[in-house]
Amino acid sequence: MIASARSALETEAGSPASAPGQRRTASSALMPLMQAVHLLTQHLAPVTPEAVPLGEAVGGTGAVDCHAPRAIPEFPTALRDGWAVRGADVVGASPFAPILTGRRPLWVEAGARLLEDADTILPPEALDGSSIVDEVAVGEGVRAIGAEASSDTLLLATGQRVTALHRLALQAAGFASIALRRPRLTLIVAGAPELDTVSPLLAHWVAEAGAVVVGIMAANTPDAIADVLRTQEGDAVLMIGGTGFGHNDHAAAGLALAGTTRVHGIALQPGDSAGFGEVGGRPVVLLPGRPDAALSAFVTLARPMIAALAGARPPLGSRAPLLSKIASTIGMSEIVFARRMPDGLLPLGGRDLALASLIQADAVILVEPDSEGYPKGSVVQGLPL
View (cartoon, rainbow, N blue to C red):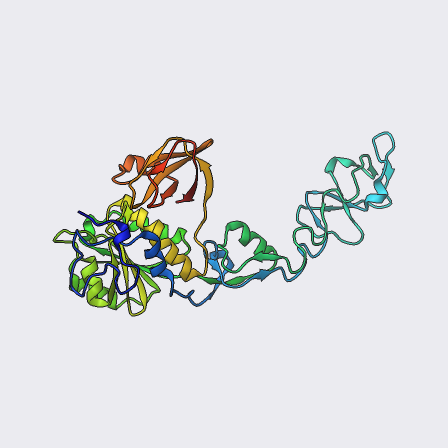
């Protein structure tokens, strides 16, 4: 019988880890999830920033504050195609009271800089030969100096994930590259590569979390796993599969041979066979090989690790009412997969969730270990996938 999560010792020395070359037994105590996350991330420092071309920056984490070096735009800009005029000169124009122009107005395209004293854009049909036959408000059709952003406006904050909209603003401000933190992760499949179905999915999750996958490797014995771990030069490792109690489960033993297995067994469902340790100062997270358990452990362990290495904060999600109740077991943190609906969160299930249901999930709900679940209508936090 698995001991209660609360029986796990509170010190690092007493955490449920394997001795070198040994596998955790099924009766070992499980470490509470929040304690495990703290132990994994407490000493992690953000990786060294790198200059990244702006076109490749989306998804990375800003390493410095980026301010607009000048007003955006620097000069009045046309918002639409039309005739550039001085607005005061066309007040009152109409088909019945046309205003004759001394010279033909200049035609401009959307985005063009306005020259001279033009401050208004007339629509194409407002000019009839040499007469203006329609009026518009002064300043209409024009983006004024600094209307997009004033000089020194904060466009990207330190620790903020770069989005496509950030890139748009930074490009408008004249940035060609920015300083980002992008942790480099290696994925190791601890088992037969032909049976691996999770690593491509994990590579996508890693990128979504703001890191870069620098390699995907496979090893299926403790010695082979240890050899692969010793040769890694990235910032962290995610090991997939081989975390259980079977004769072919060697992830924790391989980690112990190469470095230190700090925790093997976490009070988390699904994903109780997850763990972590370190090799050469680099964190190594052990993820179960089953998709639902791998995703559960990734969201709760690997994503906070990546955020710490990137100098970012894990996504907070948003609160919404439950569309059906959730029942949970006291003593275990539980990840419940859910789907966002117009009127709330629809729980899909947690442990042993069928793939047909898992593919509908776009959020997860973390049920705390002291909770038996939540009734329908409860407002809960939904973390994005």
